[in-house]
Structure formats: C-alpha cells, structure tokens
Length: 189
Image 1: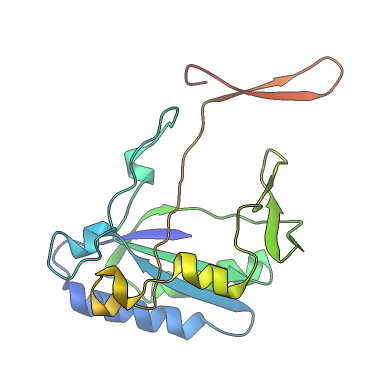
Image 2 (image 1 turned 90 degrees about the vertical axis):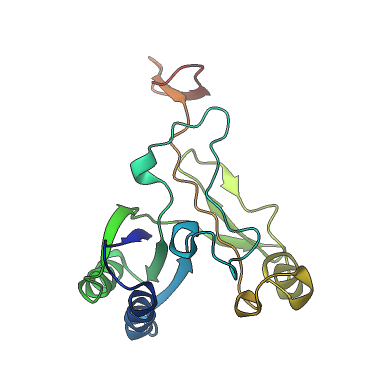
C-alpha cells in the first residue's frame, strides 16, 4: 500500500486521471491494483461521499500523523514480492505530480478459506477473518455503496476502505523458556 499526497500546485483532476492511467497500466496478469480516494483530495466540496473522513485515533493507538491519512491510496498486490515491488515502482515513476506520504509493504502468508470466509494469520499468530461475509451476496450487501444510501452517483458501486496503520501499545517479553508473551502495555514501549 502506498499513500500519496497531491504535490503543491498540481491540478487535482489531471493528477487523478494520471493515477487512474498508472494503475490501469500495471493491473492484470500477476498484478492486481486499485486506488482509493482520501478525504484530503476531495476536501469539503459537494459531491464528497458522506462517510469519507479521516481515521480517528482509538484508545491505545500510537499514531504518527506522517504515517496517517493521504489524498490517494494505491494498493498493489502480486504473485511475488519482487513482481509487486516492480509494479509499485513503475506506478510511482508515472506519478511525478504525487508525493509519497507513507508506504507499507506486507504479506499475508497462510491465507485459507473456511466456511466461505477468507482467513489469515496476523503477525501475533491470531487468525483474522471469522467476521468476514461468507458469500459474494453478503460482501456486496455490506461493502458496496448503493443508490439508496444518499451518496454521490459517482460513488455508487464502489466501497469504503479503511487502513489502520497503528502501532498498538504492546510489550513483548521473551521468557527464559524461549516462549514469547505479548501483552497490551498501558504506556508506549
């Protein structure tokens, strides 16, 4: 994931069209790529989706403002880390009117499907995804913006995306036995 901000003095419409072309150029084959608009790129203009806003901080978050928000989020996934990195670099080279706000490279090993739900292990080895919808119809009902939701016409058929780049306050303790204990910490560690 790459969060971008529009460079000073750049025309918003032209920059968004360039981003659309850059994503379309790498999307396909071994790469899947898409973009999401941030609250900053639309400002408070009319036609902005009602629910689009900046992510609030939650209790226990350790948020870095430089690593939060952004005008445009690019998500580029691929069959290997190398292929994904190359597609990301090609995309960024095509977008001189944007500056990188933050970048998060990651992976989701051991993904699996259980009862129709996509599941994965997080870095703490807990399985995530049991609350995910099990069918395409459930996904569409929960995630897709529809015409009856009082959103701008251009947003219908799209969805909201939330990325939570938070470092939780945790303390990792390596026990003499070699086991690891992870617990929430009341103060930043």
